[in-house]
Figure (tube, rainbow, N blue to C red):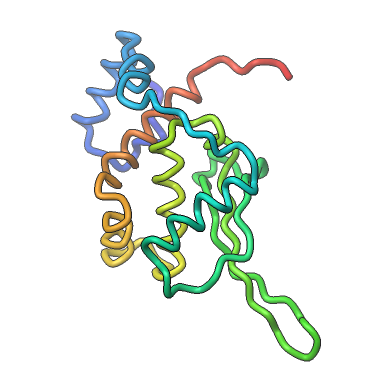
Length: 168
């Protein structure tokens, strides 16, 4: 029995339900039915505008975003779906700090709800560095279904990993 690495922290009975769904070839149809809405955020510019819109709505007083891009170097297999970094650069005689958010390119083709979930997650890191109670409260403030979306995203990643790779 192959481990479900994206669901490793979940209880055994939940993993057993997922395994049964996979065995019945029901995971893909269930996800396709529940998350049928695609998004139109294809370019880095559109992604910046999308994330900036969420930031303006929920985190207006937080630090400004310098850059938001899709990043093909992020490895989903290493659990990096997105990153947030503070970059310091010398600007004249001063240090200038800039915040960057990078989102794995798998989200370019993922359902709209999953892109929103990962954007909310990375934005929450602007205020809370650690994955603590305050962090998850902020995530659910911005996206009330955050925890369900996170679980379903893990199912989606499990499904994507099971699919055969197409030669480039």
